[in-house]
Length: 79
Image 1 (cartoon, rainbow, N blue to C red):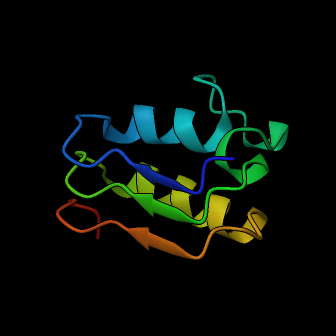
Image 2 (image 1 turned 45 degrees about the vertical axis):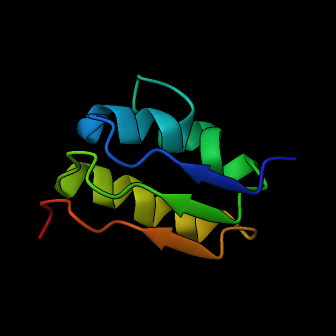
Image 3 (image 1 turned 90 degrees about the vertical axis):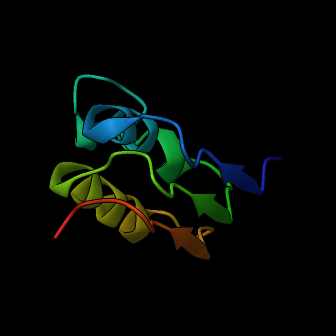
């Protein structure tokens, strides 16, 4: 299974990060799909154009993903 996912320097933006985290573009976090259901251990989303909405999606994913051990969010502009 996939253990490391590096999407750094791809212009995902908030919408792309939310889709990655939740498994849908609709923003339906209740679906608990996407990364929260995966076995990814290391996630690199450095410099992907993520703002506050993307950071909230990552926080949600971390809380529901027991396998995720490290996340690199460097180079993004959330507060």
